Structure formats: C-alpha cells, structure tokens
Length: 81
Image 1 (cartoon, one colour):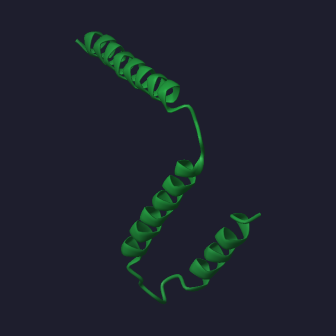
Image 2 (cartoon, helix red, strand yellow):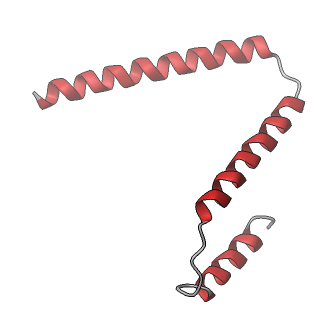
C-alpha cells in the first residue's frame, strides 16, 4: 500500500498536467535513484550475514552466468553462419 498510493497520485497528477507543464524530470529521477541505492546499501549493511559463504556463492553465480552467456552466444553465432 505504501507504493500504490503515491504511484496512483503521480499518475493522476501527470495526467492532469499533461501538456501544460514541461518538467525536466531526468535530474529528479537520477537523484531519486541515487538516494534509493544509498538507502538500500545502508539497509544491507545493517544485516549481519556470513560474508565468506555469500561471497563464494556470488562469485560462483557470476562465473556461471558469464560462462552460460558465452556458450549461448557461441551457439547462436555458429547458428547464424
């Protein structure tokens, strides 16, 4: 509910102001995303976890993702030729 009400309010305001006001929302959205990422980082930093195991799983997942992407790209590339 915390997300739906502001989202609906923003849609209604945007619809009512459509074509009347031109705002440069790029700066506002960029600042909002930076603040959101910062606050998420603070929240993640407060959680106590076993960092060694998580780091190993993260490295393994990243490696498997890269290898899978390369294999898929090679198969696709050979299929195109």
